[in-house]
Length: 245
Image (cartoon, rainbow, N blue to C red):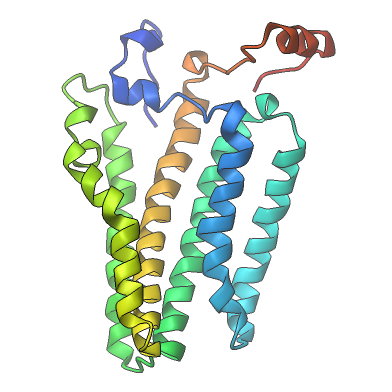
């Protein structure tokens, strides 16, 4: 993990590295982690429940219970005192979400889409492993050195040409749903594609936030902890001796 030289200040770092030292805002942290759990984990977990499979239950249910108990803890805690923990939560949640979505995609393929060819699952798994390895390697290489030549605004994921596509995504999804709703296998195929996308999306988030957490731990002197903008609330926390961490 890169340790930034002592003579470097946060303002002297390139934008992409400054961003890697910023926490999720405490003002929106609880809403963010709740929505992530509800949409990216709980929705994918529904197909895991039926038809019953003991092996799948043994793998996924303990993970799902664990992350929900952790979520409840964070919801009851002062978000200004759990900023680092929330970053770690996002990384661990993303790992669990990726695992559950991957298992869901396997189950949907076998039970609902009725794909029984063993080589499909072998290739399917290998492709996932390769793509996840690429995402992890990308995070490691990106933050392995201070590179002032990196322009985040020019990266493909920040390209404004994707905005119209993202805007049209709900409409495209609706059209696909309407065209496949009369075919049960068609609908299951669409859901399978969605679980694969969520698996890769969460794998990216897992790599990003796990690396972000340990990167911040290594460079704690450069990490800025948010404090309330409301002066009355700030004074209230000061009287209580709240520790921002």
